[in-house]
Length: 367
Image 1 (cartoon, rainbow, N blue to C red):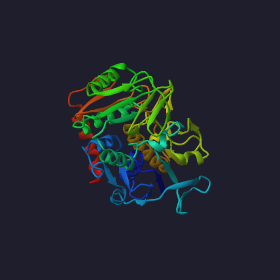
Image 2: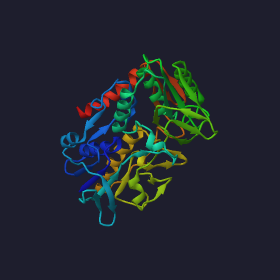
Image 3: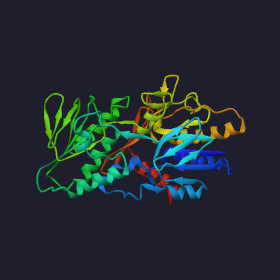
Image 4: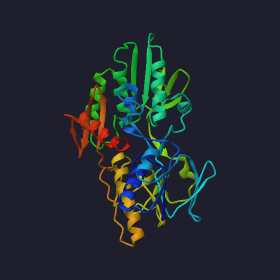
């Protein structure tokens, strides 16, 4: 049996590893346009220099070799579901019996004029490195304005790491801009938002909530209320969208994401699974969060259900734990501080140490 996994982020890697644990005979092929897994949660710390690119990424080819799988470093351009073949940019066709789609998400700029062309990002490791390079090259002898657009989890973390990076550069000012009335708007309670906002405000970050970007010009950001903010560097952290490949695939979707059944199969498909940010999974009104924890859990269950399908056994249902309605996360705030949000409660003591422990433990599988 041939299993092809498209996308080797947290979900895809988990599928491959779990499949190999459960079967020595499966022919496993991993495909990704990148050569390394990226530990995205640590990308903001690239900016402050607390981590290096090598420390928070892992060689996919080596990982594949270790589990006796094949790794193809190419971009997928289309899938023929009738012929059961995956087509790559280099015109290669890879046949499959089971397919797992785990291609993640992309940064979205919401069609705002000038935003994509004039902004940096930490959504990818390449983007984080480019942002760090821009920060290093900037002349801080003059007054400097750095704007972070989007005060979700990533935006808050970026602001905190910028505080650490700019600690000895008094001429630099950080602005954190958010469309919604508070930072961390995806979290259902305000306690974590209030704590994070006070922490970074006390670190001299100016927070602009209820503020929407209308246009990004060469030297200033124009907001929808007509006000302008001069800037030197913009770091965009305001939202994600489905991977562009999904637009080509004639599969059931919800808000652009692949709609999966309770077994993580794409709706109506018996041999095609989707995991991670790619998948839209909702059960009895509870939607899975798009986060590392759920990507790993989905990857593990998808692998199990592939094996159970082959063996003719009843499949297991997926039940999300880290959900849109009840999220949980570690949130770095800079200065080696963090807060853990779990079950509507905050935990501050040792939160940063625990976050780094989780990161190091995960990356060990690539060492």
